[in-house]
Image (cartoon, rainbow, N blue to C red; front, side, top):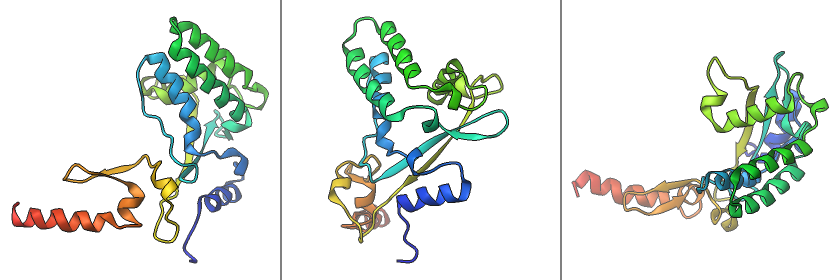
Length: 212
């Protein structure tokens, strides 16, 4: 029990050790779902959407200025208002005939929740948009000609074991193992709980050794 650590433990520990972040800067990974939905609506295609259980992960993004100072995005963005607006825009964009107008509405929504006076030095609203684009597009965000601010994601994943096995989390898992018999197993059910990993390895390793 002395070696067990939870996501809240990690969140508080990082804040104590760095002095940069606190518990109000962290959100479950699934909070980015509205952004994924909106980008998919603009592109006219379905993209990966992480809607895992809120107890599975947490994360925060830091923006680094030219002097090396790190500032959590949540300090200069109203996160809850932003993701709520993006979720509504995603629904409207999916039905919109002219996607370019939807883009304009999205940028206006971002500006509404952006506070430049709290942002890292030199991070204007335009440069912030370029930085967000660089996080989504490697061609924009990397290389010697990149015009984006550097970002760092701090995240944690809480994998379960036999002591805290939770079926509600299993049902919303976004990490899976594919077995040789074409069956899929969620990460925690494969490595903990029922112990599917040992069953799969015994069955298929024995078959491989025998040449079947």
